Length: 130
Ligand code: FES
Image 1 (cartoon, rainbow, N blue to C red):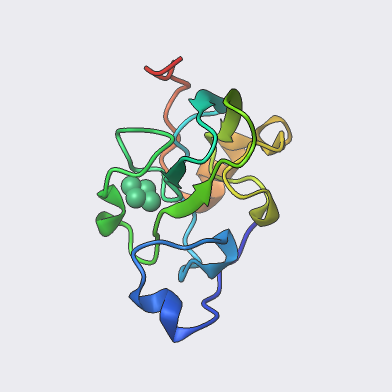
Image 2 (cartoon, helix red, strand yellow):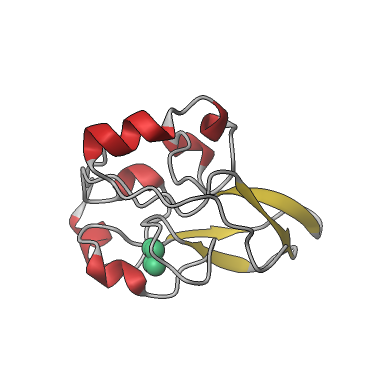
């Protein structure tokens, strides 16, 4: 399970982070979706990935993290060619994978996680942007 730490005062003042381990919280995010979101990304575009799981515009930030202390969106720029990529929906991928799905959702026991952490686990939903 990822534990987040803050590395500098600059990160405190920014409205976003550039690495997941810069988040200032030990809270678990809400599981937004049990799989990856397949989304088309454009080369050179900058995106703000939702790390808290509360956004209604998954997998991107809509500002809802104000209700989940310590969470901020993860800013990233797509440097590769235009293509569809899998962005993490469970929000529990490994930190160094950034916004990208690493298959962690296949190994997580969501039922046990919900019981142990009292995180509300919602049934899988089909994302509107697929
Ligand atoms: S990080 Fe989740 S809504 Fe902004």
